[in-house]
Amino acid sequence: MGKYPNKKSGRLGFDFFLNKLALIAFTILGGYFVYTAISTQMLDALRIGLLCAVVAVPVIVVWWLSLTRSKPVRLAIGSVLAMIFCLIFAVGIRYINIGMDTLNNITAEEDETALMTVYVRSDDDRNMEDLLDETFGTLSMTEANTKAAIQQLDQEYKTTLSTKAYASADKLVDALAEGEVDAILTDQGHMSVLEDLEGYEDAMDGLREVKSFHVVVETENNNNKTSTSKADSVFSVYISGSDSRDSNIMATGRSDVNIIATVNTETRQVLLLNTPRDFYIPLARSSSYDYPDKLTHAGLYGVDESKDTLAQYYGIDIDYYFRVNFTGFETIIDALGGIEVDSEHDFYSTIAPTTIHYTQGINKLDGYEALYYVRERYAFVNGDYQRGINQMQVIQAVAEKAMSPAMLTNFTSLMDAVDDCFKTSIPTDLITALVRDQLANGGDWNIVTYYVSGTGSSEYTYSIPSQKAYVTIPDESTVEMAKDLMQQVRDGKIIEDPNAEASDAPSY
Image 1 (tube, rainbow, N blue to C red):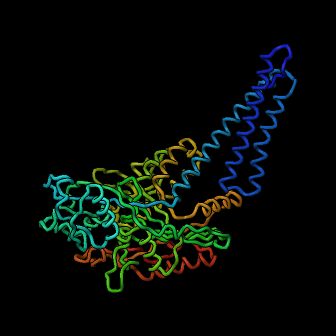
Image 2: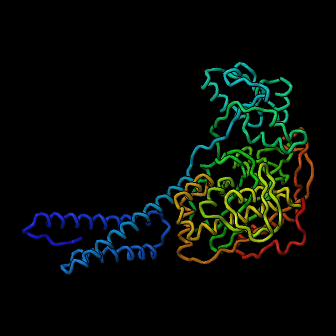
Image 3: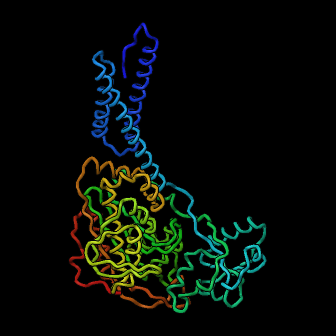
């Protein structure tokens, strides 16, 4: 790269100008790499200056080697260096763009959907076209989603469906079995509550799925998309975790993990408060005359219902939500080459059709094994409490592995998996600000966890008012402790591990 033109040779002159064009392209690529890195807004002024200096050095060296009249060896070195740094710049630009695209996707304001399904009795072989003149049973408590589904079916089949509403999923199934309706139309999440009801554990085996489709769900996401300034150094995030077998993140569906993260960016303190899925508390949507419900059932009405229910119960404001689908973790963990978790127990996960043995101590898990590790609860005396601990272990292990060099080996596939696994209302500028602060100041965060507890009982619930279901009656002393801990974080106090000081273990 860089021979001076020989007046006696037009060929050498052409090579000279071609090499100079290549040098200009190399310089532009380096500049674009710097621009791309700066546009993420994750670098402070000092690191922007360092990045510019780091990129400027090879650009200056390559230009100097290419313009010199010295030996051809030096020219060749310049050409090789130019090609190497072109590759580095190109890879860097691609990785940054993929990462930012993923971040923008998981924070994007977009329509959320619920999966609606038409069911008939298992011995009924009619298809959708054969059912258009029949009566469809629906759920009165999901009126908005049902109305949207009916409109979609009416438009698709150019008909007007006849419907009859019922108060709960068990009544809906009974109506179908007794011939009051010929089909039922509901979202799959509400049908999942049947497995918790005595006598209805196998109800889904008596149904056949005729048609499934998505409808748009109205949410309050836009209200949460606000920027966070320096003054907003404390915020709360509701983390909703599902072990749904569906790889997609649905707007409605039971939440098996319910964590409130209280974050103070000035003291670098995070409190992760876990509330059991069966906690028996009033839903935000219910009136004083309604039954309380399991916390997990709040998710059947959308992530905002779960967030508002917890905010109301603890008497706090929750600024954002962050939804995690543990099924998507399988792909992420495989892309990272597996994770290690320190199991507190020796147990078997016997969720059909799989049986996996986990030993007490360190277990190296692939994605499939990790998924069943976080799903198991019946193997433990304290059930969901232990499952919550295991799920937090997997989240932490994935985060640690993602910050290691292993992430770079499968970066593209990892970002694809993250795109399908997470969804959040946290604004992009808050996330980039947190990253920028971490890069600038470094240091560790003090992260502590606390689990409220209670005792098992059988009670009527808002979602299934006709039959008692298993619930966890809150231990008010642990609830008050949780409120106090969250307030301490907001006040800027540094707290130790509160679970180590607890005198009573949770019971279920």
